[in-house]
Amino acid sequence: MFQIGDPAPDFLLSDLDGNSHRLKDFLGPILILNFWSAECPWVERVDHELLASLRGWGERALLLPIAANLAESQEQIAAAVHARGLGRMLRADRAALEAYGVQTTPHFYVVDALGLLRYRGAFDDVTFRQRSPSRFYLKEAVERLLAGKTPDPAETPPYGCAVVRYFPDSC
Image 1: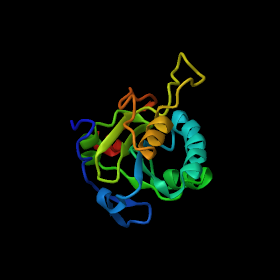
Image 2 (image 1 turned 45 degrees about the vertical axis):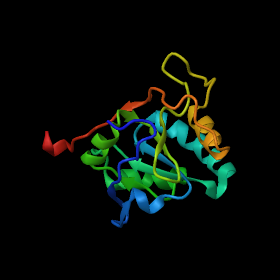
Image 3 (image 1 turned 90 degrees about the vertical axis):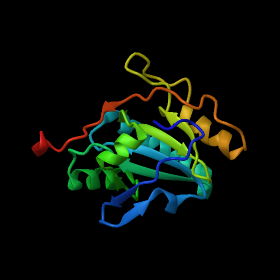
Image 4 (image 1 turned 180 degrees about the vertical axis):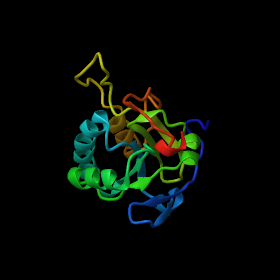
């Protein structure tokens, strides 16, 4: 698996309209890759908070949500995207999930303007046992990068729902 400071693996993924996109096409602003799920309540909680932070960062940071649960239907994903006001959504494939080592949804990766991985992990420190956040890891990482500093911590354990890597009819 690639490490903090390594180039983020490029990918070729389709959006919900069937258009193909590469990671390198989005380089410039700080990229926030959010491996996401329409069904996961942890993702739904984070979506609302993340969109508020994005408004404050303006064009300096770009969210790239990636539907990581391969068993979710196109309709299910599109409905959640519309209801939550997310805009663009890419669909993951097994290769992207494996290249990034995605474990849960949400699972965040922050990539700098040069395409280097600068942060990997959780949105905040909420877990099953700790229901209120005391640290907002993703926000801290992006704001440190915007200030020209290195995220600290640069990696945290992701927390959320398990990623489904197989279509139901392929089991």
